Length: 214
Ligand SMILES: Cc1cc2nc3c(=O)[nH]c(=O)nc-3n(C[C@H](O)[C@H](O)[C@H](O)COP(=O)(O)OP(=O)(O)OC[C@H]3O[C@@H](n4cnc5c(N)ncnc54)[C@H](O)[C@@H]3O)c2cc1C
Image 1: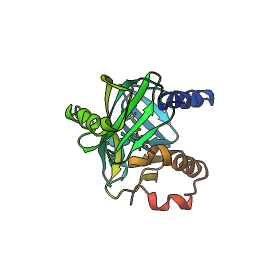
Image 2: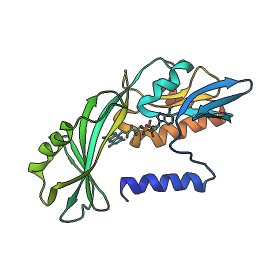
Image 3: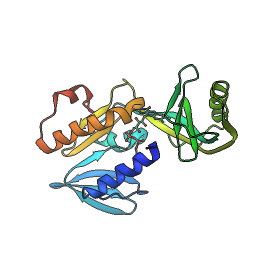
């Protein structure tokens, strides 16, 4: 399964379990209103019993009003796809070039770079060539001229390198983020622990060091 197929399968699983996904909708603010919460987004307001703020590198915008003072910054990575002579059988990592290569339906996605910049800043075109220069001498059978799907995305980095997972200062508003380079690996576990905390009201000991209000 490729990473893109994995994300689609994950969304299908959420829907299958009764969840509703509303995409392309920016949340502007979350506030407590009497006994419940109000989520303001794109000209409308949704009610909620509990909210988990998980907006990646932009987490600080939504979480700061809820007492989360430790900043989250964007550590940006770049990727692009290329055609290959033969399908890639498994992911590859080239440590000296710090480039990762993952299979796609038509070839491979080539990824690298750690850049400190605004999460919404436009991509710096030269970064794509830097990745290619690092990977090219180590690979055969890649059509570098076929480069497509240029992409930049952000790793959510906290100032102390530790994720922010747990309750905010506002009752029933929780935070899940700041996993930096390890969100895919660690997110399922911290998500499970946070769900346990929300349902039982008891903070699992594993989350103590991740307190978002530290
Ligand atoms: C190039 C690269 C390679 C990586 N490699 C690995 C790896 O090998 N292993 C690993 O474990 N991790 C890896 N990571 C890190 C991992 O991708 C992140 O840690 C993880 O995606 C963070 O998850 P998140 O849900 O906190 O944030 P995101 O995945 O960034 O998701 C946050 C979402 O919130 C949305 N959002 C933001 N603001 C709002 C708003 N106001 N309203 C509504 N939605 C909003 C964003 O659009 C985004 O969709 C890599 C990251 C990058 C960039």
